[in-house]
Amino acid sequence: MTDQTGQKSNQRSMGSRFVVTGLALTLVGCIALLWIPAPSHPILLKAFYDFCHVPLFGGVAIILLSLARQLGEPRGWSVGSQYGMAFMGVLVLGALTEGVQSFSSTRFAEWSNLLLDILGAVGALGLYMTYDSILTGRAAIWRLSPGETTGSRRCRVACGDRPQSGAGLGLCVL
Image (cartoon, rainbow, N blue to C red; front, top):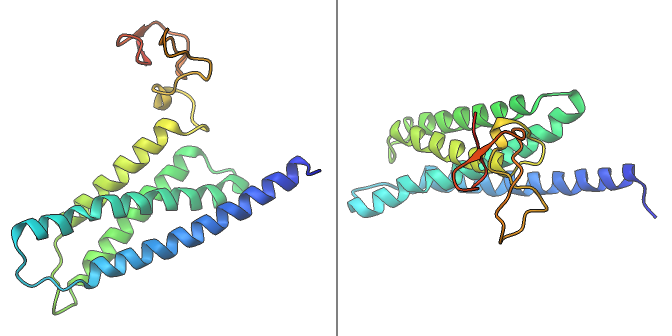
């Protein structure tokens, strides 16, 4: 029989394995995006390459958030600090990848891709924030209570027991 401490350490070690694997896959993805030769592509293929920045850096943001959680929780970092660290990590990594491309003779830096990297991070972190069990308050207004039934669509929002609007979709009146 395992006590709570054993379960937490097992969960942390599994989380560490996830982060290491995720960081390795993200690094491979970034290298692939960096070094795909970009001669004159048709406009659709270029748009596809540019779009790939959104999910790739969204994944990077989630992985960096997981890493920030593992490093920050023992040190008492706030949840906002953890999300901020993940976002800043994506910002720095995106700027570095575009900066490295400016030194390559086969690639050229498109700083508009940095905006796509940021868009991917904001989208992924925002979606993750919606379902994050640690968050309480206004950021988690879409989270429904565990006892909600599909027929009644009654929900208890995390921002308090204020009157709800939005046809029972979990929006609270602020």
